[in-house]
Image (cartoon, one colour):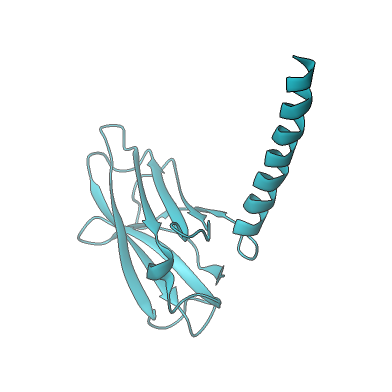
Length: 154
């Protein structure tokens, strides 16, 4: 039994060190960010956010999570990611507008959606510092948005 413990403990320690090293490398330049959503034009909102996670892995380049709490009830919102490659102030027309997910709220005005981007989908934008804004629209007008965020794509 003692011999088995002596063998297993070093292996567990080694696997822990390797997994921590891999996690640190995955977010080497751009660290995952939590961006609050704000209401536009008096739309109801208790809280909301965009979680922008850059895994930079072989299968998942980025993972975005969108959440609303206390928003308008039973509404579907199109999430659009707007990217400006020419400036970091979100000024002028965006270089790219990308519909990412549909977030639907329930009877309490709560909703959650997500999207995963592959490394192939990020080609052409990698190694750039861009400005970005996420907007949620109900089909007729924008209801929620983040601020202008500077994102370094590694």
